[in-house]
Length: 358
Ligand SMILES: [Mn+2]
Image (cartoon, rainbow, N blue to C red; front, side):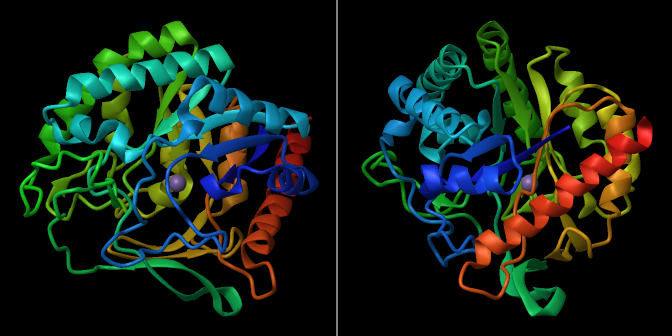
């Protein structure tokens, strides 16, 4: 098992990679879209959700990805995965809209480019509502600020917003009528995911890239009128049943999965790590389950994270684990301190479970 760290788009800089190395990480997961502030909060920013999706970001070109990987390699780390397509790349794939075919071709080109550059995993979250509705508060130990979910009212999604980001009006179809996105059933979302994978998996296999699906966060059965996919303990099983392709894999989020009601996180870790199709792990802890939960420090939530590591070890998981997100610690560098705390804990815990086995 390998220790990794996730970086947001604004953090693709040598100093952040060196910080990861100093904290013991060997791998980077690059979270591609979004304008998350460096303070690291992923709570909503009002009516624009996470913000406006930056159109034409050159990071997605061959040159952009090659430079990103080179920058990370120059600091002595590996680039393990890209995380999340930009909403502008695939809103009509999610919405089954008129630009679907064109957008599929663009995503295939991105996957081929990843193969050429040598980036082995593309993490994705097949969702229209996206990560939405979270609040920020002093929910973690000692009043550390973190995000939570408190069964919010769920207004429908305005047209022009996908994955909780606003598509740039010059990119999004200007003729798109005002109003809101009509409800979509969960079965229809599964149908769209299957159609997406049918097109993408052969390309990914040929490029040597694995597509890794994140569970729906928060794991509600519907969010803002849109059906969700992986929000029960059987959700990933349905994903894996779609195709046996080695490119059809999971971005296995311990935090999100442990928020699923009436489900046992250790059973899920056992069942799914035994398939060998976990591409990488989001290793974070949480207190509570939907529709009420709070993100915590790694050692204070409902889940025994060391027990999770032992199961992963016993099933031969040899991929990367990243902290995902953490509470912010009270100091001049709240995000850095929170992540460094998680990485130190993870590094010791991984060594512990590996030594136990010898
Ligand atoms: Mn996650």
